[in-house]
Amino acid sequence: MVPSEFQLRQDICEVGRRICQHGFVASNDGNISIRLNEKEVLATPTGVSKGFMTPEMLVKVNMQGEQLSGQLKPSSELKMHLEIYRQRPDVRAVVHAHPPTATGFAVAGIPLDRCVLPEIIINLGSIPLVAYGTPSTDEVPAAVKEYIGSHDALLLANHGALTVGTDVYNAYYKMESLELFAKISLTARLLGNENVLSAEQVYKLMEIRARSGVTSPNPGCVDCGACSVSTREAPTATGITEEELQEIITNVTRRVLASLGDRQQ
Image 1 (cartoon, rainbow, N blue to C red):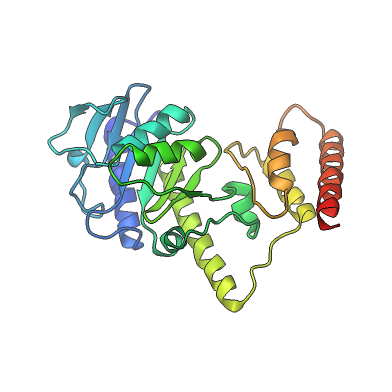
Image 2: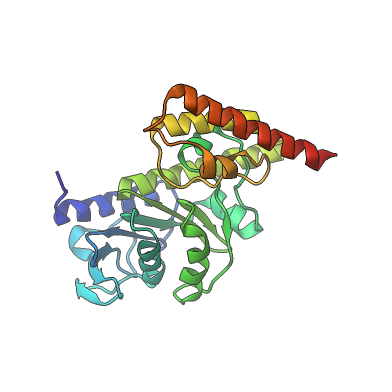
């Protein structure tokens, strides 16, 4: 059953309360949107705390950013949301916030692109650092455009974080996962070592990903070399037998391990 527009308005308000309660935003920071259809987008207004929104405060715009309804003005970051919807037809919602630890990585200029946590590898993939752009200008959507085609989560340099999803809760949960990953990564680095998984370990996780039917982009990490190959060559969860799946994974793994051995010589 397709949710009504009023239900979607309530969903945005609930996600707004959650990002506020978790400290992912302060004051009037952050913005949230849902694509209603191919022509209309529901978005949070500017100048309003995300923890105190009501359904009637939200605004409706077209894909050109022209306001169709609502008493308040749209967020100044709306351009970024609309560019994402143009680039990713599969995306139905966008959440932009400033979760402290993830934003700390963004300010430090450090992407979260290492294969460390199995849950992140399977469900989210690597999280790159997008070049800085002046907020509310065309610089931000232009920078995001370079990465959004193959990532569901981004760090925005000196700005914050961005996640997308099949619905607004899906996008929000990815923001939760991003911030938790950032906290764990920071703790490991402070302890002196962030243990990166091997190519073989990553391939086993990518097999689980394929069998689970996860279809969102996952370009992988920069260290083991496994994820980027697997996303190009690994089979989908349908239309292939288990034996064929295992054979393909084994062959690709051998090639990656051989490539890694050549690099170390």
